[in-house]
Length: 193
Image: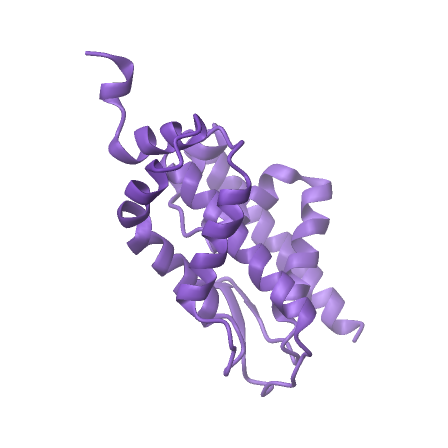
């Protein structure tokens, strides 16, 4: 049995796409659509009410950006989902930068998880989180990647470990430390408003 026949269908299609086979993306899209929709919905839930960008438009923008960068050496389905989640975050951040911020009710929150909930007073919450993640990446790139993969990508601890090529225990430790750091930084920045 050849190495390529042992690969899962998504990984095989990703590698064909990396090799220049543009048609493989048409075969790949239906296989990852459910996961991409769930990630897009998760992203859109943290956006302000009345956001004009819809889930389908967000996914389409990710595909457009992926088509522009065929140089990625795809490793697996988890790797693809991680990159797609990162691109969704970038699309939303770019969108937030170009759309005037509106005030939102004080009670609206951006939950990173039960242990870390932000209560921003402006719709710039995604921009604030993005900026704080950039700060974290300067200090510890792997911890920032863990947040991207777990929070934005919805990857499990095991999937995150595979993408980052570290142990699950490392992911668990990085996740806990990154959440604590983000919470402290976000609370400190809110205290200076």
